[in-house]
Length: 335
Image 1 (cartoon, rainbow, N blue to C red):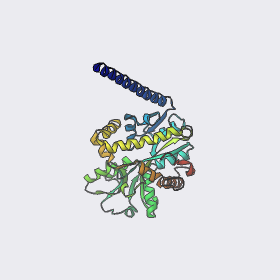
Image 2 (image 1 turned 90 degrees about the vertical axis):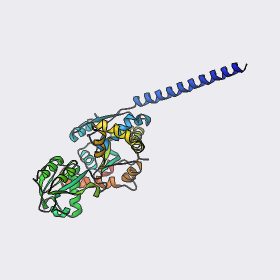
Image 3 (image 1 turned 45 degrees about the horizontal axis):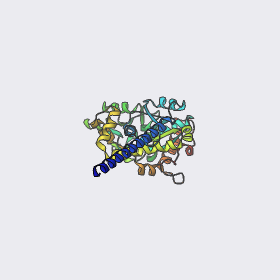
Image 4 (image 1 turned 45 degrees about the vertical axis):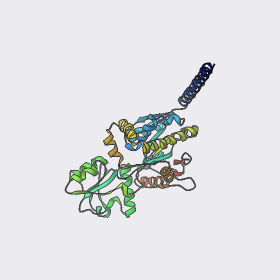
């Protein structure tokens, strides 16, 4: 009798467990199907370490968990990314804040929904040793990219801070990478560049790092902008997209070794190479992003930099006229 009772009890337990597992499996399948059926959000960015946490969100299923169907693609050319966004072949792009201003000025309907990271030492100015401060660049041959981009934006910001202008220097226009190479070859007195040229200058007997982006927090920063149509039609998915970034950053904080491996693989680097590249970047968690973005009533640094970008690029004739800054930021998706 006792054995029969135990057998029946065990049988009931197994049936209940099987039912729970079946129910759980059905629920997971239903969620997966629900996400797949939602409008796809295709995002694009260049091979830059600051965007790598999106691969954690993909690998660990954070997008799916947060109800958004995301497809990641890499488009190295800024103009190609903008063309794809304008044609709605993609719905989101990562870029420095000043580049989002350029896109908006060209009539592309986009809105920044999150700030993702900032350069905190990865960009800088290399100069001959006798040049001790920024003002000492006056009259010197300085290499800098002059057709837009983060380096040129930062350079113009520094000029404005010091009450100087480009006419104070002998400007040599070239890409940031070429600028670094030109300095190492001793062809210019200074260059606005990035890694590995900041490190390479230490191997010369004539140069040093004059300053880096770590001295101007939040100025060279990136944001993610989505096509306004997608935002209007899919507000819940946008929330899920933003939340997935924060989930990825939290995973990175708690599981750094695994997170580094995921991101390094996605970027085609070794773990060591990726970790070194990431050392000059500050990734934004929810607290930092909320502070940087602010609110409509009390805007943060994102608004200030967006406005500054519009002003500087208009002055430099990179854009014909300033876009409406109020239309370029949506504060509602960081809760």
